[in-house]
Length: 318
Image 1 (tube, helix red, strand yellow):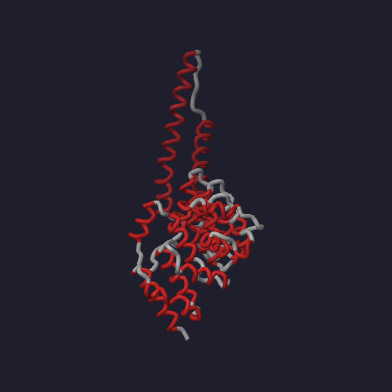
Image 2 (cartoon, rainbow, N blue to C red; image 1 turned 60 degrees about the horizontal axis):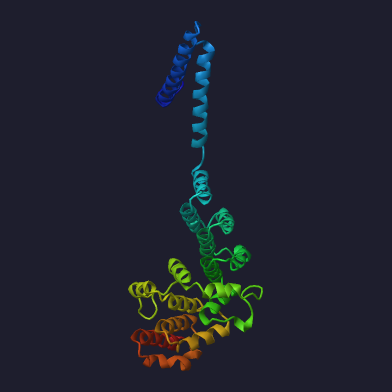
């Protein structure tokens, strides 16, 4: 027997749509009658007219039903793909960033890779960051290509993503930013210095990018958000950029990076010195202890604490 309660619900659903269509038809029909009467003609609503109205109702219901048959997964991807192709830049950035939690569906990587070609640098930066969070090793060639971008934020986002996958070119980028020179005199990409010049001449953009990515100068040797913000607002962003770059060398296996960190413990800027100690502690090479003990008598208290923590950590390693 046909389930009456379901049919009742269907009637409730259809009725307002049918009423709307009929109202629309009657309005058109009335206007048509007035036009015809002026020409001494008559018109009636024939069976064919009524069938046409019913057809419109069927079309509306079919269109709505097709949307309702989407699975939650299909609907989810419809939303995300709509966001990544939205004309609003902020919407695209948000949608691309949201892809970072989708580790079980390769479509997230594909979509983020496509966003690396977005005309807006904020979207490209978000795409690179997402690929880093997903640790998409298959995307490494595309991220290496992103190091050639003309926008500093995109370059740093790509470098950060590559570092998360222990890629050498990612470390090379941070080494160049930290030391102001290239490893072995070679270019970052294809022996070109354009990328390095772009980075070094845009410290404000780099500082903001580092902070947004959560890799900025928070905390190093006891410096917290307040100190970070004070430096950032003072316009001394180059200090933050340099400190952040040294921090990112913590896991670079290249001995040249370790040497650069040791040298940085004598940097004129205390924030850079503290960052260098922080990175050395994370590297875990106790053989450098004899070269960094001077930090225990540093005149800047934050650096002294950072050095003490580094020495304590390395001394405890077996």
